[in-house]
Image 1 (cartoon, rainbow, N blue to C red):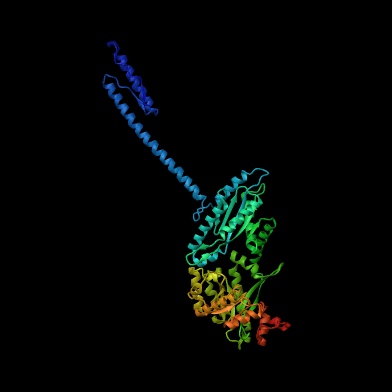
Image 2 (image 1 turned 90 degrees about the vertical axis):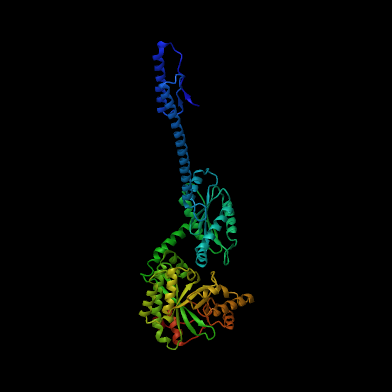
Length: 539
């Protein structure tokens, strides 16, 4: 409504003309004051006189109207800009709390939701629970199909978690292939039930462009106790998840205090492992590779062990994964290569009658990424007077399939150097025989899992025979590992397989026992070697 001033009187005695003008001027002044105060809808009445004062009043009214329109437009723009800023702020807040790839929450949003759940907990009632979820073998998917395919798998996993966890739960991706689910209020039974639902949802097939992926996961559960912070809860759930990853039979674990000791032991082991090379705590054993037809020794594979000062001999399965996680594998791998080549040099006088005796050394994926790897191998060969063709580097299937520029350069350069390259654990990943033909390898070591049942399973026997024929058709040699029985060795020999390795022939043994085998020209399998004292000195 227009804020109008009282209309001036226009019919006055002639002697009252001056008061009438004074009254109108007062209204003008009052109107200007109101307008100046922000009352832009103020309207000063115009008299019937239509004189100069009325002209001024009309001008003031027009100005006030224009100012009112300008102000209304300004207010609308300010309101619109404020709304846009508020929406942008909310969007930024959401982005700061959302994983950009999967659309679920991130670590920050999980912390915030967990803090709220802790604050809302009613004493004596069940509190929040956190399920920490890590995909098993996800790196193999990335290495085999590429990171785009890996991203698609993560997006699908996130969607399945949201569906399985329920609308009242918070799902977050913490990074890489690690997720978490917050159950706002949960008993032990409820959290286990949620974990089972999630596990069932995750393990379903994910169709890919070239082949299907069957995800596997490990889940750690922790039910929050009184006075635990969000960081404490997440640490305990994460600890339980790592315990689940280490137990191949139970992929769901509820946190127990003893698990913290295991985590601390892992950190302590990593610290001690850093000193293993400089403190000369590592040593090598060698497992023979045998000609299946004659039993003749074709070569050996160097296998590292750790002589821990307190725990005794630690086998590679118990420290190599940790070395790979911490990056220590590069230093350990180089020590292994130097020590093995030096041992080969000591054996050389005994190899005069041995044709093509090959030394196999394992090469980790991280070592392939070292820019000076090829120079190191070349220098090590020269230092021990070893021909490049006498050394075979065993590289896991996943490492070969990673396809990075540095890895490809290293492989091509090693091949040009004349070093043998062998794909290890073939049959455990996603590679195909046709893909192997494009890799710079000349030998395939078939994983033990493929031959475990060939003695009693005709179907598996035919499958292994087909794999062997495909490998040979690709122009590659095959070595079968994990031969533990005479029946397995005989079946492989009948297939035409040339080389084998396994406990049936020999366990990994000290260098001195290999020395005796070479000195006496023994074939395998045979009775365990009894090492004379003099042979120990020969290593």
